[in-house]
Image (cartoon, rainbow, N blue to C red; front, side, top):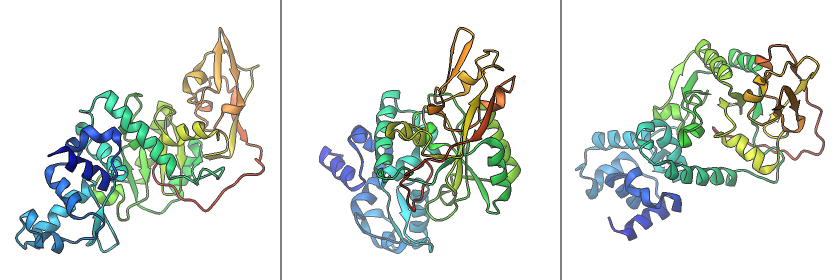
Length: 326
């Protein structure tokens, strides 16, 4: 396909320059045709069956099966709960599906290509936030035992997803199948066939395993993320905006008793925020960097660390916000 057509697809699908050389990698020729044909339109299987360019010759069932496949691949999204009316997705939503549902394919990209896409995605995520608010989303950092109680209390079906943050770059070495969600409506990973439905006991064990691996726990009401500090968009943007200890919200902060510390340094290795540092056999703690996740508490052999209530923060600007899976 000529460069002009690639540029047109990039414009319609809202693809960034970081993906300019990857149009054919991400989108097969028929998907590119869908994007060109249905720009700015809602469409159904009947529309596709009646379009000469796609070769369905009026066969609605074949057209419907084809659209289901493209929905699962993230190229298109559903418009309403009927599941019959579709629209084009954009590249931001598509990439989230691609890197998780088609991880082996995505991993064919070079490290440089992945990091360019990751940098763009992080900036795009920031653009979705109202950065005039101190807490632009309702995300909260929650310690292990509290998170297990949240899972127990919630009556909704539970689903397991790959972590999209770690799937995009994938070089921190932390577990990837760690995201738990209760979302199963249109355009969710569950509805697209990416999620695995699990029970509460499995969900709790996944959170415990994530905790043992050294991942922080956060929730936004629709699901649970088990986060690292290297890949997770929530904590990377937290640092970028200077909102450590403010957003995501945390009721807790670590309290460090240096008199009990034996200088083993386990807390230093566990902390993603560099709140603990070690020089020789002396460990120091900087409370201003603490997000209250509690993963340092769980492995301190001398109980030198505990979580205590975080003092109230005056003058916060918050809003009626919602958050997806970042």
